[in-house]
Image 1 (cartoon, rainbow, N blue to C red):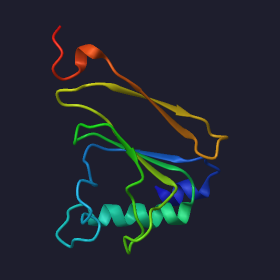
Image 2 (image 1 turned 135 degrees about the vertical axis):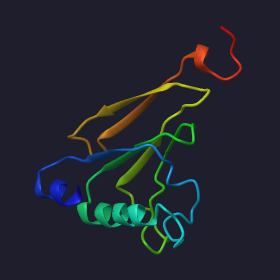
Image 3 (image 1 turned 90 degrees about the vertical axis):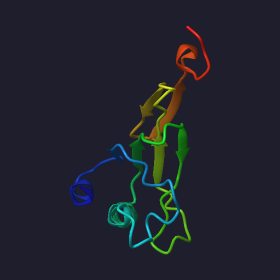
Image 4 (image 1 turned 90 degrees about the horizontal axis):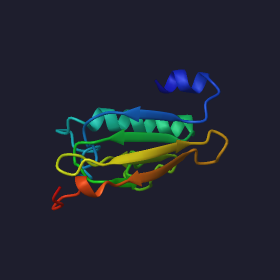
Length: 123
């Protein structure tokens, strides 16, 4: 995917998947981690592509917007990668994603929270 992206004039790239590969800081370094190879591929591809990359996933069911991907030695954050972990399970909400290909950071976020879907609310 990164090779195809680098061959084209793109503003950024989006990956959408289910699992939370960032629930533990050792996922990209532990030889027993089922996510290590994928995270190392993301690391290498993001550093070579040098374009904004958005990772969208669910699984842990909390809204998180951060930059969890680090260099292979785990010392530095890879600045061009943003993660959006969406809500789910008992708190199903939505996230509006705005894309402006001309902006330095083309991805913007706006949570759309419905009171009826919040934990503890009664219909």
